[in-house]
Amino acid sequence: MSVHRIVVVGGGAGGLELVTRLGDKYGRGKDVQITLVDRSMSHIWKPLLHEVAAGVMDTATHQLSYVAQANWHHFEFAAGEMIGLDRAAKTIRLAAVPAAADEGEGDLLPERTLPYDTLVLAMGSTTNFFGVPGAQENTIALDTVEQAERFRRRLMAACVRAQNEAEAPVPQAAAQDGGDGGQRAALLSAPGRRKVNLVIVGAGATGVELSAELRNTAEVLRSYGLKLDPRKDVGITIIESSPRILKALPERVSGAVAGLLGKLDVDILCGDSVAEVRKNEVTTTGGKVLPADITVWSAGITAPAVLGTLGLAVNRLNQIEVLPTLQSKTDPDIFAFGDCASCEWPEHGFVPPRAQAAHQQASFLVKAIDARLKGQSLPAFTYRDFGSLVSLGKFSAVGNLMGGLIGGSMFIEGLFARVMYTSLYRMHVAALHGVWRMMLDTVANRLRRSTVPRVKLH
Ligand SMILES: Cc1cc2nc3c(=O)[nH]c(=O)nc-3n(C[C@H](O)[C@H](O)[C@H](O)COP(=O)(O)OP(=O)(O)OC[C@H]3O[C@@H](n4cnc5c(N)ncnc54)[C@H](O)[C@@H]3O)c2cc1C
Image (cartoon, rainbow, N blue to C red; front, side, top):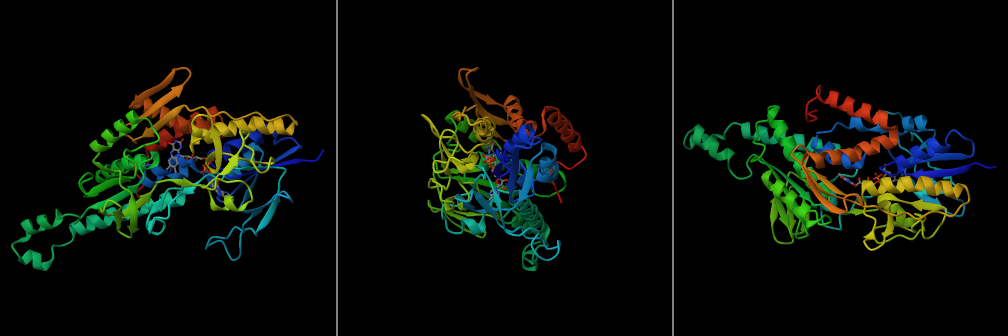
C-alpha cells in the first residue's frame, strides 16, 4: 500500500492542533505521512498578540517551535510560504526561505514543490485595510509577532520621547518671559505638549482588548519610573464606524465594555470612519483630525491573497468556499478551515473567524480525515457557538456564554469571565501538549511572572 501524504498549510490556532492530533494518531505508522508547512519557524496563539503589543506578555515564553512539536508528535515540518498549487500534479509550491542577515550568503532553502494526497489549507487571515489612503503605510496591524513587537518598541520609544520633552529645559525666550516656574508649568500642560496619542482603528474584540491592555501598560510604566501621568499623558482613542463597539456581540456586552472603557479614560468615537491616515494623524470622514503617535489598524480581516490565485472557489475576502465537510467546493482533495475558509453556518450566515471555530474545525477534521482514509463518507461540520468573551486585561472581562446546559445566552463579567477567557488559551495548550503539560506550563508561567517585570521593558 502506498503512503497517503497529508499536507497541512498553516500552523496556527487550527492547523497546529490538527497536525498534532494527526501525528499522534498516524505518525508512528507507515501508511500515513503528515507534513506541516508554515512560513514561520514558530507558533504563537494569535489571540495573545495584543498582550505582546502592550508588553504584558513575553513571546519567548509562549512561542512554540514547529520543529520541536513535529519531533514530539511524529509529523514532518517544512518551512516556507505557500505560493502556488498544481491541482493536476497534486503539488504545492513553496517560496525559497531567505537567510537572515547573519546567517551567511544564499537562501536557507530553495523554492520547491511538495506532493500531497490530501491538502488542508489553514492559512488564517491578514488585516483588511479596505483601501483607506495611508492605512497600510502608516498603521501597525497585529497579525504577527513581529508586528506586535514593533508596536511595543514604538510605544516604549514614544513614552521615552514624551518624557524627555517634558523634562527638557524651558526655552530661553520662555524663561526670560516671566520666570521659570510658572512658564514651565504652562508649557508642560499645553495641549499635546507631552502627550502620547494612541489611536486604534476598529472596536472589535482586538481593538477593545488592546485599549485596556495599553491603559494597564501606561500605569505599570509609571510604577517603573516613567514620569508621565498614565491617564492624562497617554491618550487612547478607538474609532469605530458602527454605532457601537463590539458590534458582533450582544448589546449588553457592548454596553458593559463601553462603560468600563470610559472608566479607563479610553475615548470611543463611534459612527465615524477613517478617511485617511498620515504619519502622525488620523482624519475621519466626519471631519475630525486626531493626533496619533502610533495608529493600530484592527478594523477587519481578509484571507491571504495567494488563496485567490489557486483556482479554487473563493469569496470576496479570498476565503476558500467550503462544503459542510470542509472540502473545497472546487476540489474534494483539498480542505480549508479556520479564518481562511468560508463555511456556511445555517440560519446565522457563516462560521465566524474565531479561535474557537478553528479549534472545533480541527477536531472535526481529525474525524473527517480518518473517514476519508478508510474510504467512508465524510461527516458534516456543525459549529457550536459557546459565546464570546472580551478581556480588559487586569481590569475585568465581559462576555456571554451560550450552550445547551445554560439554555440560551448568559451575561458574565469580572473574575468568572476572566477565568473563562484564560481557559480558551489553556484549551489550546492542552490540545498541543496534553492536560498535564498545560497545568505545568500554567504553574511555570505564574512562577516566572514573579521574577520578571510586569511589562517587557527592553
Ligand atoms: C489580536 C487578536 C486577538 C484575537 N482574540 C481572539 C479571541 O479572544 N477569541 C477568538 O476566538 N479569536 C480571537 N482572535 C482571532 C483568532 O486569532 C483567529 O480566528 C484564529 O487564530 C484563526 O486560526 P487559524 O488557524 O485559521 O489561523 P492563524 O491562527 O492565523 O494561523 C495561520 C497560520 O498560517 C500561516 N500562513 C499564512 N499564510 C501562509 C502561507 N502562504 N504559507 C505558509 N504558511 C502560511 C501563518 O504563519 C500562521 O501560522 C484574535 C485575533 C487577533 C489578531
